[in-house]
Length: 115
Image (cartoon, rainbow, N blue to C red; front, side):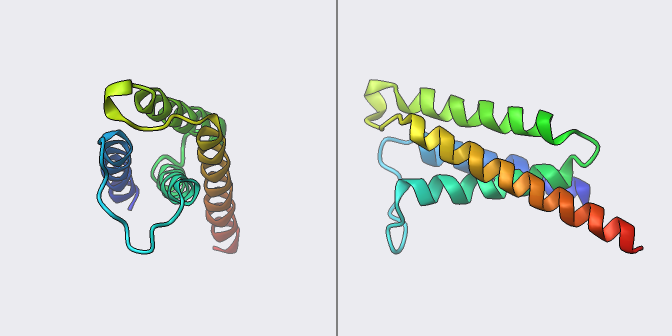
């Protein structure tokens, strides 16, 4: 299952990056706000990372995901892409990633104690 989570993480990161970098992303039903999209993406990435890389520390995974969020914001600052770079988006990315990392690790640890 860890291998599946790792594969899903790579796929989700690729999709997240592409959606953040294309000049005109596809329409999403219900048109959720930019912050909601960032939250959903990084909660997903954080959960997959926590489960797929259980031997890595939460701190290391958090730094990696934060760096990925920063990379997205730097790419969105490229004028030709006509996207908006926003430090608040990075803050949302980091908060969602940390929450997902913590919840998944807590659940995995709790499940281990019950065995």
